[in-house]
Length: 325
Length: 265
Image (cartoon, rainbow over all chains, first blue to last red; front, side, top):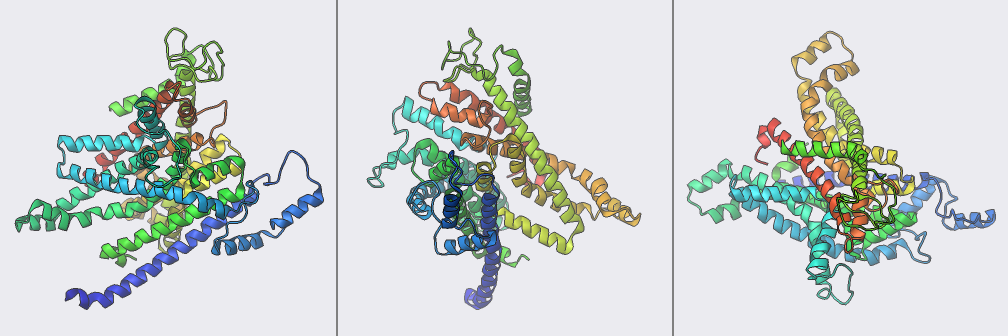
């Protein structure tokens, strides 16, 4: 009953909150795109600088074909307009392929890795952190925290090769890399190590976050109240402590996604996974400007969108967040 | 304490270690290519596939990594402190606008922008310093601003204002020195982040260039040779991980010590 009576107010507030978030996200997007755009244009050396000098007329034609002869703001406008239609422009290195094609090809692969890693990070991180919180200052708590500190400190491009060394070279349990195309099940063994390497630092971070906030929640008055009412430990944990305890984890999901995406760039390189991250590195080494920029913009948009969604969820779950400023 | 000792040991080794070995970091020892670690031929950590001594290379790479850590952190410190202190002290609309800008920048995928920057403007060390420092000041600015807000209400600031001291001078002489505690804690947590970013770039081949090296670049080489010469991976990776671990550990400890409220976290 109470819920229905406040529903109108609730909706209006939530709506205003969402609008505010949209207005925060849009400038971020535009700044990102403009920054990337001008950085590329400001770079010394164009994409067509080759060993041979081109005939000036031919060079002018090429420049005209790629619209490089227009004033900068016009080029930016053209790029933005293209982006709005999902067109990232042609690749400067892969002849006859557009950046959109390359992204469409690589992203599903990266998405599978990233989604699995995030899922694993959440499950394992929350479980380990919650467990440590329940046994605060006991041996298992210290053990979990020590392991997670190690997990945070060892970068995933170190974890990756070490996993290969252990599981592929010495134990010969898993393939060292590659990406079979015949279905999800066939590539499951190939996915195990990259997913673990990607997830490990996030597991560690989420475990620490969960532990900290759970300890705080478990000490709070409403939990003491629930205990006094004689509720069982599991009911207290699941029904009362988990939601407020996981709010910090929720707000960490934005940075976590960014970290997983960034991490996937090296992980794909290490394990030979043909995802977007590998295109990105290849593009970066080949000076394929449009490809690099396309990936930057694509991932940037993704991260900003994800941050936006997380903010909205946070607003839905925590009424206090909606009222701030 | 142990963490600090290990960190000091790593630093001292990196600075003076290369002097102990008779070989230079880019000397090619053709008689010991991909040789395992041994004490007899001076290659304590073995050699890589070009016969370069890994002991010296690891330590020389460590110099770069640590230097990036310090310099880039210093850059972020300067930007973060001046930005945060200014926003916090001036307050009002200026503060709101400045902090909104920080909010917007927060959502940026900076790693990608740095990579873009490295791709476009060549791969020199100075640029790495500045680029990494320039992206890491956001947290610092926020923390410094928060702290400034509470400091500026203290009596000695009011006294300075009453005495007609100019705003820049108040910020420099009265606000900034009082930020010291918070800043020190934060610096110990920024250094490992920065080292990590640098090794990430070097790992991708976008950071420090041959024949110079850093821990990230060495891990990359080691990862390629790990089947035949696992030591080329293990030693640099060990140094990198140990350094990051110690920095994080010290930073965490300091934060807990200075902020009892957070002790549980």
